[in-house]
Length: 261
Image 1: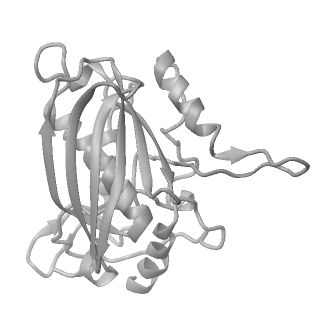
Image 2 (image 1 turned 135 degrees about the vertical axis):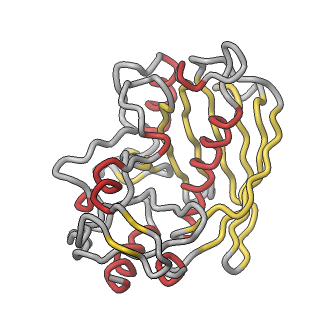
C-alpha cells in the first residue's frame, strides 16, 4: 500500500493529472492516521467512482461577476501564437472534486493497532470534502482556483453562499478562514507536493456580505526545506477593497508520515 500511495502522491507535483497514472489503488487494510489535516486536492479522476464531477466549472448559481472572472482567467489558460495552434498559457485551472482519494476497504469494520475502530465502508461512502459537501449549487462554497507557476501565484474566485452566514447578512469568519486555507493549501501543494497546514494567521479587516464574489490571492513568500510560506489577501473583485489578510505555513509530508501514527 505504501508503494501505491508513493506512486500516487508523485502526481501531486502538478495540477494536471499525469496520463501515465491511471490505476486504482489496490485494496488496503485499515491504518491509523494521526496527523493534522492532509492536503490531497489533486486526486486522479480514476480514483473516484465512475464519473467524478468537477465542481470548479460554471453552474446555474454563478453570478455575472463570478462568470466574468472565471472567463478572464480561463482565457489565459491558453494563448494563441501566430501561425501555430493554441499553447498552454500562464494560468492553469485546478479541478475540484467532492472527495479526495477513494480507498477500497478490506472489511466493513476493522480494529486499529491503537485499539480504535475504523468504520471503513461507512466513511468511504459518506466522506466529502468540507467545501464540497453541500449539493445545492451556490448555497455555500462556490469557488474556482487558478494557478500561475511562473509568478508563483494562485487565485481563488469565491462566491459566498447563504449558508455561510455569521454576523447577520455577512459571511462567517470560519468560512473565510476555510477558503483561505483551501487556496493557500492548494497553492502550496502545487509548489511542494503533499503538505499539511502548520500555521494560519488571519487578520479580518472588513466583513464580506453574503452573495458577494471576492478574490482570494495567494503568493509564495519563501520555501525552506520542508516549509512553504505563503501570503494571502481577500479583496473585492476590482482589488480596491481589502477584506482579509493572512499568512500561512505548510509542511511537506511523506507517505510514511501519512501512514504512521
